[in-house]
Image (cartoon, rainbow, N blue to C red; front, top):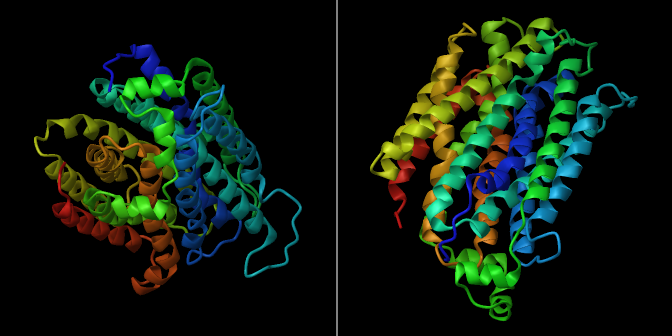
Length: 441
């Protein structure tokens, strides 16, 4: 690879749109359970609404990786997918929070009312578009940044990721604070949530347009020279390998890191699904989704997730100080496990800050260490985009399994949503134990 250094502003421009994309993702993560509970979903149904996001990610991201590996046009290689994904996401973010306000029939279809079906399809398109917009940022760093600057480039991307999460998480409570209504008639999403999605959509498109306008991707000849790879004719001969063949050739690290990912992402799926109900019951003493207490708890969950993002930023500074990356991985996951288990029993909303700071340690490790271990093992491959897309399945599949089994597990542990956070802590402990199977490259 050619040792060409980018300026700090170039590195910043390369990932700036990720800030807007992450706001959209944070709004989805923090508010989906709240939205569907408001629309009338039973707690035992909530996990099923979370199946669609990872399912769409598992389908979309490998395809975006494979297609963009072979896309060369006047607008770039990855940027066209970035722009299309952002535009669709903006449209869905405007319609999704209005699911309860539109004139749908109250007739149930397969146990769901019209508003929930509308919300379900909106969620499917929102997560698909977010995945389409998110994947190109990871790939553009791999395409355009030399090895000597990749750590810095991914650090900037991580900073923008957590900053976007912070903003998305606190939007509902901010809009409530400035006087926008945080309650609404039964079955209707509060205005504080609606405005959070509207403003998030505006920031998303502005950030993506900034990156689109200020980043110039390489043409095929420049790319081949920069990476020291074969010319485009030779590359075409190997670019048509199918997903199955590439998976067969995948290094062992792909699978062992994937096992750790399975436990970690299943744990966080249960956090996203059941934190709202847990906080409402433990700290506000209510399970009535139409009550002011439940909606206040929904706002507070956004604050807690913002605290988690702060914990992630702080712990990300500590991770490089570990001499052994596997030790860092294990310690991070165990700290997060302690945070999950503690949060199930805390009944003071402010004391939850401590447990979510601990959860942030696990999140920091999950954002950085799997990709560090994997890209080291994939050094020299011409299918980096495709492999990164396939590796996303190790993020999506465990969420699908966890969501599909969520209602069953909730019943087995007694029906209290707080116990699902204990289950999440146990899953992180299993993930920490699985790190021993990883072979460093």
